[in-house]
Image 1: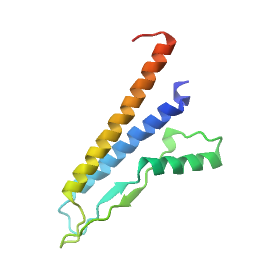
Image 2: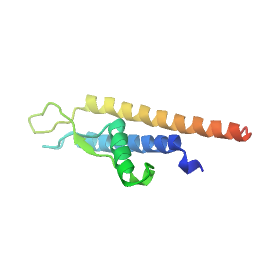
Image 3: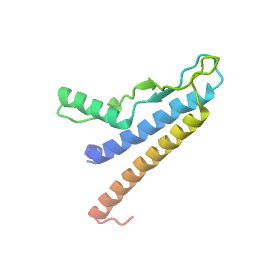
Length: 125
C-alpha cells in the first residue's frame, strides 16, 4: 500500500535526484583544477518529473516506478579558465546548498506523510 502512494514515490524520487545532483557537483569540485574539465549538473527535478510522467503515461497506466527514474546530466555554462576548465567553486558551493535543501525538503515530505498515515491508523508513534 505504501509503495503505491504517489506522494511517497515523488518524495523518494526527489531525494534520489538531490543525491545524484550532489554526486555530480562533488565530481565537479574534485576536478576544479583539471585542465579542460567542463562543469556538469543534473537537469532540474521538475523537468525530470515531467519527462518521466509523460513517458510513463504513454507506456503504462501512468504509474511511475522509482526504479525507472533517470536523471540527465547537462553541462553548465560558465567562464572558462586559461586551461579550459569551467568549474567555479563558488557556483558549485551554491548548487551544493540547493541540492542539500532539496534533499531536506524531500525527507521532510516523506516524514510528514508517514506521520499522517500513522495518525490516521491510530498509531501515535
